[in-house]
Image (cartoon, rainbow, N blue to C red; front, side, top):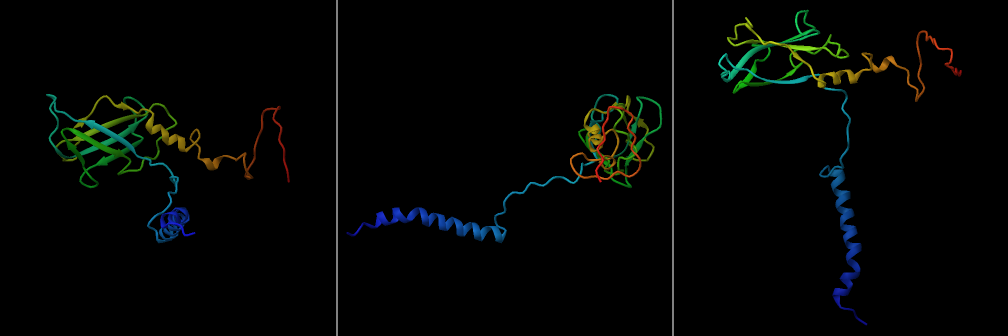
Amino acid sequence: MIRPAHQYWHTLRRPLIAVVLAVLLVGLVPSGVWKPAVAQAAAGINKQIPYQGKVTDSSGQAMSDGNYNMRFKIFAAESGGSALWTETWDSGTARVTMTGGLFSVYLGTQTAITGVDFNSDSLWLQIEFDPGNDDTYEETFSPRRRFGSVPYAFNADQVDGLEAASFLRADSDDTATGSITFSNADIGVNVQG
C-alpha cells in the first residue's frame, strides 16, 4: 500500500528537525557566532568612591557650567586634624565638570586611596573649590561630610584590617610560619606529621 506524501513527512519531521538543530549547533559554537554564557568573577574591588554634589553661589544660584579645580580630602575627625588622603582635580590631572551646578566624581581616580583605615567608623570628606581655577582653593565647603557605609566596603576586602593571606585556612592544607600561642586551656590542638 502506498501512503500519501504527507504521512511520510509526519514520520520524518522530528528526526529531521533534530539533525538540523545539531548541525546548526555544531557549526555555530566553534565559529564563535554563538557562545554559551560564562560567569566570571571580578579580580578585586574597584577602590574608588562615587561622590556627587551641587555647588551654588551665595544667592543659591547654580554655579556656571564649566570645568573647575577641586580638592578632596579624607580626615579622621569632623574638624581639625591632618588629612589622611588628598586628591586634586586640576589642569594637571583633570578638572571637575559641572553642569547646572552638579558635579560627579570618583574619588581615587587621580590618587589611589591608600593610608585610610576603613576599619574606622569615623571618616570625613572635606571639599575645597577653586572657582577661578587659579590654584587658590578659596572655598572650603563646611561642614565636612561623614562617610556612609559604601566606602566601608573596602574593609570587606580585609578582615579587621588584615589581608586574607594573614590567616590560616581550616578547610584545606595550610602552613604557618612563626609561632602560634594558645592562651585558653580548653583548646585542643591536633598536630599531624
